[in-house]
Image (cartoon, rainbow, N blue to C red; front, side, top):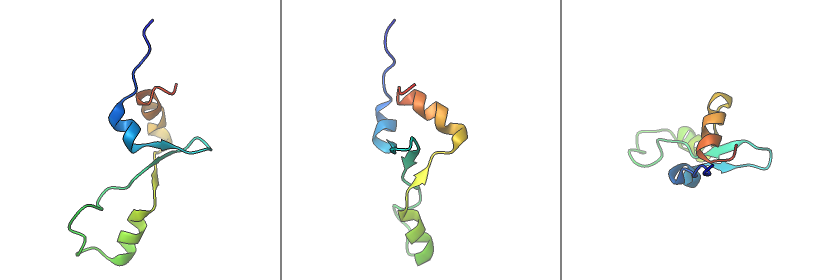
Length: 65
């Protein structure tokens, strides 16, 4: 039986923490930042986490299951 390949684009975007959560970067931080408040931009710097409902599908793409 062949092994499942890792999805390389997901591997570059998602990191698995020590506790097993999937950490990702938030969207809306590339351009058009002048119209956004400092608070919103500051909060976008912090990592986002993949929701529990999507976790299984991301782990399948990472071939971790």
